[in-house]
Length: 124
Image (cartoon, rainbow, N blue to C red):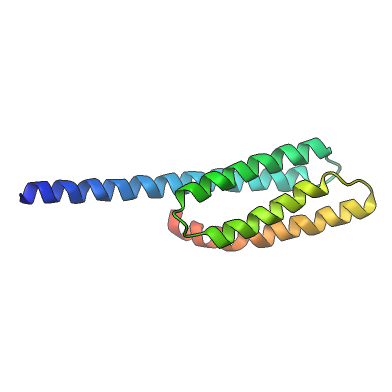
């Protein structure tokens, strides 16, 4: 009986470790995607490049949310809104749109910071 309890406890510990590794892996993929959005949206990018990279970042965000067990939903929602704003800004052209894009990128940076802070600690 004791061996069975230890086996179950060990299995549960392994599951938690795999879950944490999955979360951290998804987090690293998200950070790389957000960095790509920032890079694509600076300078004179094409609207398609910004949209594509934003869509990849949103997909990575969905993947992170799926493994985060609800712990980061508010932070993820805030970041999702900021990335959607960048994606939307890609449709606009001109100097005013470029300024709006700078502002939306700042929102992305501000939105990702608290999520990064919490997950950097958990994934280090």
